[in-house]
Amino acid sequence: MKQISDKRILLTGGRGMVGQNLLEAAKGLQVDHPSSQDLDLTQAKDVSTYIQDTKPDLIIHAAGKVGGIQANMADPVAFLDQNLAIGRNLIMAAFNANIPEFLNLGSTCIYPRAAENPLREEMVLTGELEPTNEGYAIAKIAALRLCQYIRSQRPDLHYKTMIPCNLYGPHDNFHPEKSHLLPAIIRKVYDAKSSGEKTAEIWGDGTARREFMYAADLAQAILKAADNIDSLPDLMNTGLGHDHSINDYYRTVAEVLGWDGEFTHDLTKPVGMKQKLCSTEKADAWGWEASTSLADGIAQTYAFFLENHV
Image (cartoon, rainbow, N blue to C red):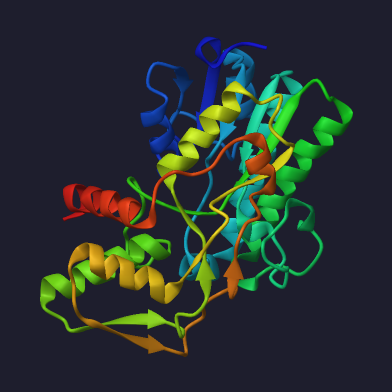
């Protein structure tokens, strides 16, 4: 098996948050990262031709249509259809081209809405999914199952899935209607501070708990997996193993940004699952853990926001 420095790597989603953080961490490595204009991942023939022509040693699949609760609820058709097509096209093209290594990135939304926390890898497909992002979850489950089926038929092919918890960091989406929780909080608190507002609104009562990991920490986990994919479990959570309430995230962002206003709660808004906390038992045994604290991660993300979005 080649060392990572000798591998030709194909990264999908190179312009997304995960992809850009990974590219920054992977300087010096041979990483192809075609844009969606260069390679439309929803077109099976184009994907197959590209992989046959370039013959990467490893494919890292980080592409997809992503968004928060509002975006998922507004367009579930696209979240299921596009992500299903992208995952299937890539995995089957790699399989048919006999590509030896495939690292698929999943999402904790694949876990049943009523699953007991912490969420363990064997809980996949043991219960009903959270309705607010069900389409996206179904597509992600299909991709990870396809990788598992390939492993069962061809154990020599290392097609494996890492399941990151919620992520935030530089290169995130800060659009008020399309962003995930933490960048949305940063934008909301920044706007309140800038306009002199004394209050900011939180959806729900703020007691729901979430696990958010700094994206650069995931990049380091991916690079470790790329260099040690034979030892990586076939399915592995990649998270912190601890979480915070929504109210905690708002308070921490307010402290980092230096805003001393108060928060109100809109109890009519959807909040999704009450808790999504990953078990890190497999990751701990594999020898990896995240290193960035919440306050440090928010401070670095805010610095990126100020430089690029203000």
